[in-house]
Length: 118
Image (tube, rainbow, N blue to C red; front, side, top):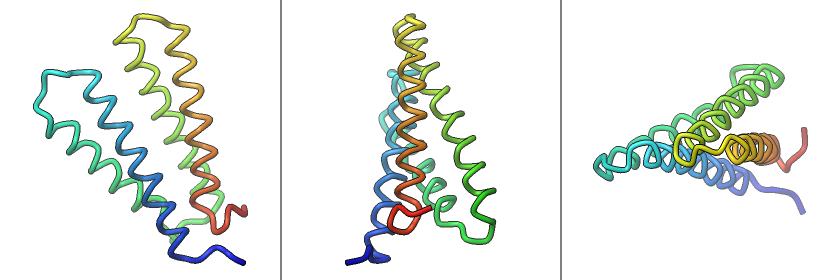
């Protein structure tokens, strides 16, 4: 029993929404006094861009994986920075950044390849 194209597409949508939600959550942490639609808008824009990027077929696989990994590292560093500005604990910020990068890379590599095969 193989993985259908619809299931792969649903996985891409779900992971893109998770990435967008994390961006919106980080925005809310940075400035909780902003109106609610700022983080929601940021989340939707980032999720849309992530989905468009992950469904791109015109660039080679190795270049796509390299760009994706670089974006995940930048996003994980951003989450770690947000944690540090909120709680002023560098150890927790490093843990948050590293764990988020590892999870994003694992989810990105598994969810955006058909059936999880490289």
